[in-house]
Image 1 (tube, rainbow over the protein chains, first blue to last red):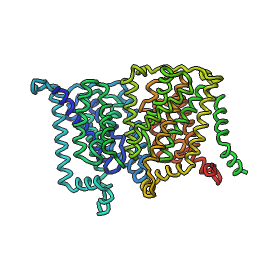
Image 2: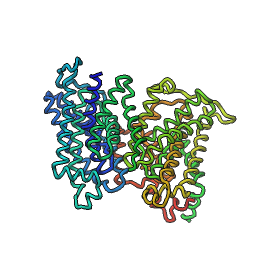
Image 3: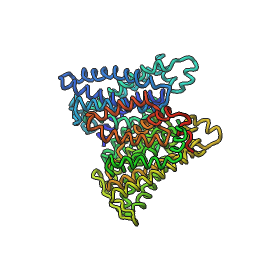
Image 4: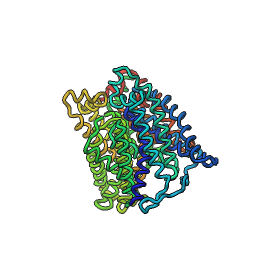
Length: 276
Length: 318
């Protein structure tokens, strides 16, 4: 049971890291960035390629995050910004098109067979009589550190405060002279880098395959909805909550884990309908 | 002269559509033409909420699948009468729409797209694993249908005529619907829902009605494809296939009955014949979608309507 709970917190941490970018783009621009699933996949695959080239785990992970910066910048600059202010539907379809292209390119380069990665730390600690992989505890620690860092960023820095203002009421933020959109590409790139980091951290726990992004994107979208649109703390709480839901369901009936997350999402929508 | 031809075409559009599909018969196999018709019906149902109501769904396969499984389950457990099975598919898809509709129709844009997709994922899980004892899981299930009077759907030509008749009825219905005050209200919701609400309309209720109509039509398309193939597999409800109908609605031109039909045929032609030549199909689809979104938004029908001399066919249509 303790290992199930620890697993739930681990995947919750990963969901949180990935959901930040979704929550930010969703909160400020109201679009769902399907390409988020692409940078997640790219991060994991770059990690795999770098590990095969006999790089250490940390440099490989860093490389994976850095590679996504130009990709995310190009997506923002050439796809999303050109459609911004027009119909939201076109932006959603266009990012989905980018995802399709990217997934097919991944398949082209690395093949469609799933690739397992080994645990980079490989040590276990014994907690309350249960042996837990250290790597999973590291993931939880990374997620908490990112949460603390973002809290500081949003409360203490000017850029962070502008982003929060944009999340809460974009029109009002504009009306007092803040150019929310200017900061948006920065937020977008940071969110994408975090998604790549999520993919990198998750990769040794699951297996890599070109379509890995689709499912994670949906689950993370459920996290954003359950946590409340544009609420960073809500996203944090919902990520760990849904991670636990997934782990507990998976313990009793493996295939139903994802469905249970969507059931929680539906229940949230029944209790508190979204009108946007 | 040209204008009178246009008016004639608009007046007898059902005859023209039937004629065009009949003209496809010698080019394609009968079963494949039926497939085209069924897909057009599906695009029509999708366009009712996308083109007319302005809600992009990324989970419309759920309702197609509900219809297909509804027909197949009906043939096994209830009655092998194809008309009863078709009714069952419409009722099941409509019921699923009625169940989920109150949750999704309040939302717009990205929320609407992804909540639908999430429910589609749940539906896929249900037929693939949770209800595998009834639906056959990954292997799918076969559906055999009896004959009704002179109608024997195991004969390809009968199936073709039956599907065409259903499609024409649906076209007539959707055209009447979108031309009615209800259709005007839907388009107003697409333009600016807040203002419609200010006028005193309970927009949620109207959106729900349109949503359930759309899911029922998609269910009819699913039921017809179960009738056409004689089997149902989880690919009928695969959430990854939602992009097909979005592509079709975009390439045909959203918000027009004729655009939906044109888009359905265009997508089926592309997807049936191009993969032989294009190695990387998903990549091709992605680039084509980008091209449509950036350069070709009005679609084929919009392109035709722009070039046609005024009064355009669309506007003459009653």
